[in-house]
Image (cartoon, rainbow, N blue to C red):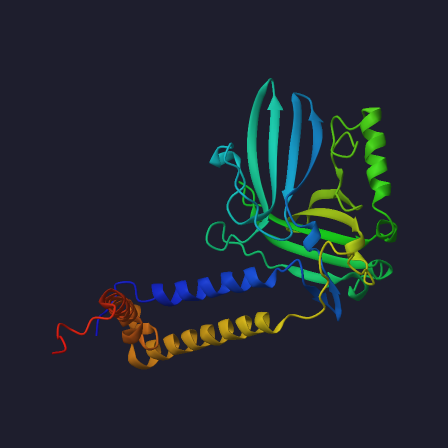
Length: 323
């Protein structure tokens, strides 16, 4: 039996892969369900940006916050790697400190799946506001999303909390927000912000709602970014008007894939644990049916060769001719 100088690598790598995939599956913006109530935020997907400016004696600090609740942020090709958010970021801050005409740029990952880099997991958590233990939340209608995983250059842990709050006025007519945007454009007040806010701490989400920066401060042991998102999609009785689909249940295919994935993962983990403890297996031999798995490439190659020979052979009779 072959041995490996690193007996635990295969087993640990398998566990980390399963955990990261499970975390990716758990954050589904199109099918949010808590306490028996469903929400669909698919229409709010895509990168959203806010910014704030703070002055200090020698200059100012411009902090730009970018988030995407449905998928990881895409790396920008025109930005140096050291000045952009790391891979798998969901919420990120780019801090530009300007002092004496010198600009220093600090990317700060706030939330994302960084299990293999910064060591933090996204750990998304949805909470229906009316089901929250806080009495203040019980008066609100909507859902709260908590994400974490990020750290700044000093090791300060970060966290993002987004409250999707029901705004019934956005369910009536979107034309109201479009007319408001036209009025702001004519008045010239939107030159420094996306919605006329000079500091960019509140922006229009394009669906009649507003995304607002509440705070970014240290609370207990973490620095927490708090955002309020007033939107019709945060209303429990909202019925989609055709821009998306609000589904209260997962489909059969989704459940089938999840159950199949979890079954295979449990089988591989248990089989590897059994081989390690009972047979002292190492390396590839940890996996159940390791010999069969190693033979798969050769079996596939033989099968492809047989298919090619069949196609090339056409109607050949193997060299014999009928007399």
